[in-house]
Amino acid sequence: MNKSTLWTVVGVIVAVIIAWVLVNVLFSLIAFAFKLLAVAVVALIVFFVLRLVFRRAD
Image 1 (cartoon, rainbow, N blue to C red):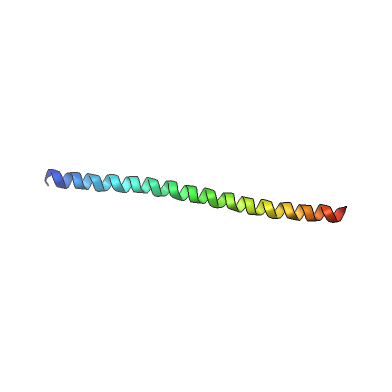
Image 2 (cartoon, helix red, strand yellow; image 1 turned 30 degrees about the vertical axis):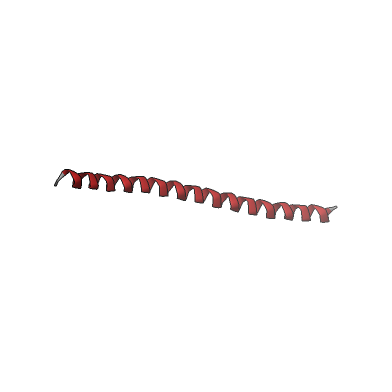
């Protein structure tokens, strides 16, 4: 195995590790954004339901 082949193998391993970390971070951000969106939608629905309930109570 010559020096060029060794550096190619090392480069591929480093590229896979960096890609793994980046994809992990990306999926974490996507999951956080989805959770945030879901919480906003549920909070909006609860807000309008409570507003409707208390309006009828008066």
